[in-house]
Length: 67
Image (tube, rainbow, N blue to C red):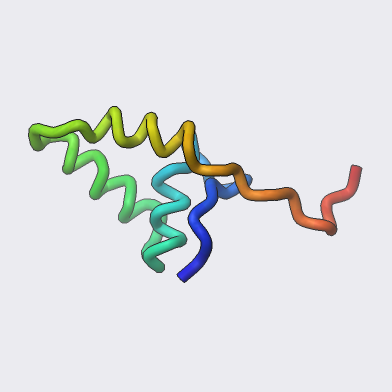
């Protein structure tokens, strides 16, 4: 499994769904659909998303990035 960090590319809002998708080996689109469907259920989904957005580190820039 990949390390849990918000990717620099493939983000839509904060990169949380993309990070979780990469961690569990599924597509980011599938993870986003799961999140949207889960928001129809009662629970703290939005608060969890915000907390992960704040707590998850952003992926470091690769060494091949040209300045």
